[in-house]
Image (cartoon, rainbow, N blue to C red; front, side):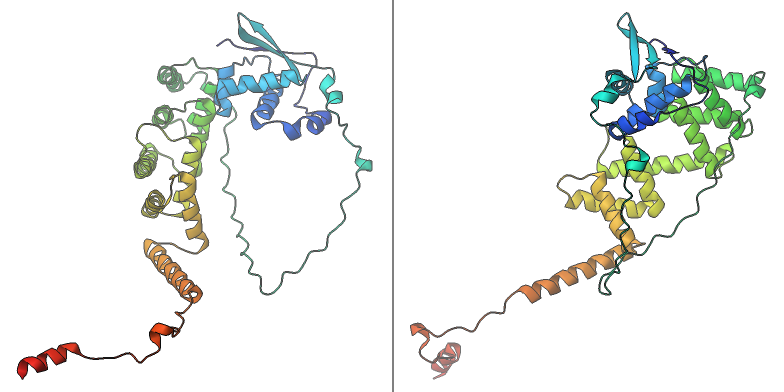
Length: 365
């Protein structure tokens, strides 16, 4: 794909988002459209930046088609214009003039003074017989990882040059400034340990996600977990790979890799429970659901967490209580058998003759 050169009819010293853009376009814009728009404005601050659809797709973890759709949508709305060469996108121009679609949107933003404040509604007290869920405890945010900013110290680092060569070979893509920045930051983050960064590249390639943004996010994640040397990182990732493989096997997934949403589910589950509990939830999903899914298993795990289930024994005890409660409710709802009403066939006293005793008496006589 061709690199895209950016042009603008106005100079930008900082990223500026017009109020009219927020009022007119932001409420209906998709996530991809907003990311693309903001990143283009950021890229205009650096004239050396060359973009391609693939670069932006890697950065936002979407397909190039999604990026192109976002750009085309902004062009239709009059925010930018696209130029083409030999059937490929070659340039993007952010427009200076107020787009005509501002007026055609059919709604001018109201002035701040014309907007009446919403009336204050007094809080209603909850009745005593209404059970309220306990408020979740606020967890302290994990301390952020300080990121190295001066990468010029790596210009003469031979080990880092070898890392760049390895990355180009494994990813099968030329190293652009963004990849160099991600690898350089990761390299300094782990105290210039080339083995850690080489393993980082190999790990991301194995996950089929080798964009600069993903590589840097993995490196930061390892650092946040307190992992510092290669052996710790290998042990941790091996355990995760085992967990993912076990969960895939439990779901019967063999011929494809898990998508991002599925991996997010797994990450959430393993923060709540150990692997045997997660596998038990999946087993129940496969037995109970008409169409087994990660969402169904998630509902089981969240129900356990809400009711205080911590072990498999707790889950079995909860099941027993649930079934006993259901049986009690069923018995209460079932009507008792009414007494037999006497009819023409029941207007005499029934006999209770022991015919077996009569037969024995006849045989003995």
